Image (tube, rainbow, N blue to C red; front, side):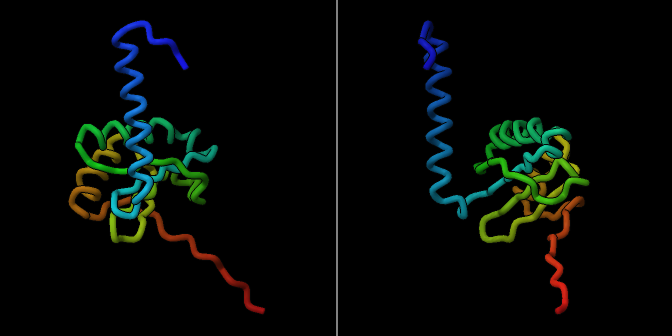
Length: 132
């Protein structure tokens, strides 16, 4: 743990602890809130998924939208990275591809706040069963 050398250091530490506690509280009932999962496999990271995740967190806070933002592994849509899965309370999750910072703002304003479907929804991957 870092030593506290100033009042500013103490404030930063307090905010860090608050954010950690807030995440724990939200994780107790994730089905009742907006969930955003950012694919952070190698291909996602290579196309900017870290920046998209950070921007999602910042934009949701700025727009005062209560959501749980987490990272996940490969979703199987390497061709459309960065990809983001969004689950609204009581609805099935949707995966959006080719996500940019501008798309993040659009997803928050249109889909998360108003429930309006947008372009770049990726289809569900179906498992093909081979006949015997």
